[in-house]
Image 1 (cartoon, one colour):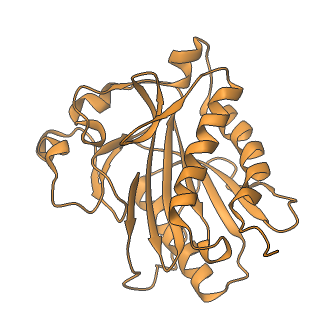
Image 2 (cartoon, helix red, strand yellow):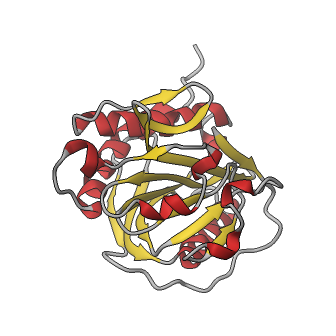
Length: 247
């Protein structure tokens, strides 16, 4: 699983990025012990989304009562890679047709763009047993269950990050953690053009085939439609992260 555990080196900017779409919470989970603020932000460039994540992380560090948040959005086309000295998955960055960012997550190069649902959970794992492995498996399980509700049989693959439909990759996962507060998250291919992945070696896996909900289900589907359905699932599933009470 792609993960980078990094210390926060400085304060986040207080500038407020311009948000597209609804720019308001879809809902707040009514689970008694696990409130969750899920926000649909529409389409947003990567730099603004990163700034917003860092701002919420800083707020949560300063105030433990700030509710856990999941940001759901689409990105303008962008390539990212984690903190790794091995950047061969970029195949050299000079040919890339879209901007490129190196960020504090684990893993190799990937592409984000229109037609892809980005999910950025900002969750204080100190309230969930400080179990990073459990958190990563929770994200995988969420995506697999969600795809199952769309009648797409997805699964994990031993030794490989992300979520797969047979040999085809449908979702990528890359997580950063600062002082046990998570950022970054997952990218779920919903619809649209997957050809920008051809410019890199996605997640460092040679000859990987990328797929999407639209391709697998053979029906037209929008990112906002998928975001609304995913929000309902994650609001139900967040309590699973909590540590069982001591006997």
